[in-house]
Image (tube, rainbow, N blue to C red; front, top):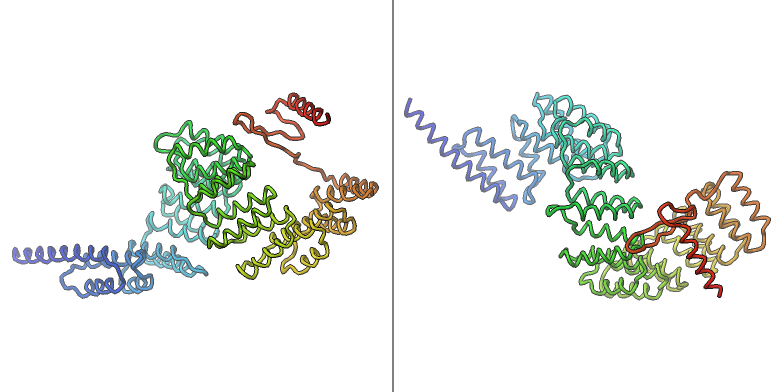
Length: 541
C-alpha cells in the first residue's frame, strides 16, 4: 500500500511538472502551429492527470479565443471536443462569441444559445457570465433581450454584484432607457465610481444635462473620467459657460491624483471657442505650457480653432504653422477659420498646400472650403472644389455640400444655375439648400423667385419664424409693404413669433457676460445702454 501511495505521488509530481511546463508554453506561444502541437501533447500525454489535462485545455481555449496569435475557429473546435464543459469553459465561449464583431449578430446569437445550453445542463451562471451577455445586447441595442438578461440576473441573485450592475446601467443608457437605468442605479446595494460615471455619461449622451450635473454634484469621489465627461458633455450640449465654471472647480478641488489632461484641455478650448472667450483661451494656453502636457495634434488643432473663432486669425495661423504634424482635422480647422473670416483665397491656398503635403481631405474639409468660396465670392474656385471633391477624391457630395454650392451661386446672382443644381441633386433638397437660395434672393432682391422659395420653406416648416421674416424683408426692400403686412398678419394668426431672443456675449476681465434683447439679470443694463448711446452719438459726429 505504501508502494502504491509512493507511485501515485510520483505520477502526481510528474503531472504537475508537465502541467506547469505546458502552461508556460501556452502563454509564450506565438503562432497557431505551435498551439496545435501543445494541444496534441495535452491530449496524448499519459503523464497528465485528468484534472490537470482539463485545466490545460481550459487555458488553451482561453488563449485561442482572446490572444492575437489564437484562432476563434480553432477555439470553437476545441470547445466541441470537450465532453463535459463546466462553467469556466462556458464563460470563455460566451465571452468570445459576445465579443466578436460581425455584421449580422450571428456570434451574439451563439452566445445566447450557449447560455441556454448551460442552463439546460443545470450549470448555474456566476457574476462573470452576465456582463458579456449584456455587452452583446448593448452592442446590438437589443433592449428586449437585455431586459430578459436583467431578469436572469435578479433570479440568480447577482444584482448585488457591482460589475454586473454597471454593465446593465451601460446597456440601458446606450439603448436610451434612462428611467430603467436610474431605477436600477437607485436599487443597487453596492455602487462604485464606475456606476456613477456610467450614469453621468449616459445622461449626457441622451441629452439629460441637468440630471447629469445633479448626479455630478452628489458624487463624493470623482476621477479624471468624471471631470472630463461632465466638461465635454456640457460643451457639446451648448452649455460652454457652465463647462468653464466646472473646469475652474476642478482646478480648485483637484488633488495630485486628478489633474487636467489632454481631453480636459481640448474640451475647455472648445468651450472658449464657442463663447469667444479669448482671455480664458489664452490662460488655458499658458496653463498648457506650464503643466507640461504634450501639445499633440489634437491640442494643436483645438488651439487653432479657439484662436480662430475668437477672432485672432494671425495667432491661429502661427500655431498651425508650428505644429510638427498636421492631420486632416488640423488642415480642415485652419481652412474653416479662414472661411469664417471671409479669407477665401487663404482658405483656397491652404487647401492646395494640404494636397502638396499629401494629406487627404474629407467631406468636412470641403464644407469649410466651399463656405470660404461663398463668403468671398469665389465662384470659379467653388465650382472647381465641387468637381475635385467628386472626381479626384471620390467623395460623394452630401446635402450640405449642395447647400454650400447653392449659396455660392445665389450670392453671385446665378439663380438659373442654382435651380439647375437643385434639380440635379440625387437626394431631396432640405431647408438649408432652399434657405441658401432664399438668402441669395433676399440679398439681390429677386422677388419672384424669393417669394416662391419662401412659400415652399414655409410649407416645409410652417412654425419657423425665419422664413416669414425673410419674405417680409424681400417685400419691404421691393417697396411691397402691403404684401409684407399680409405676411406679418399671417404670423400673428398662426401665433408664430421669435421665441428665443438674440443674445450676445462679451468677455470683461476674464468673465464671460451674456445679454439679450430681453435684458440680463447679470449685467448692469442701464450702464450698458448709456455706453452704447454715447458711442452712437460719437459715430454720428
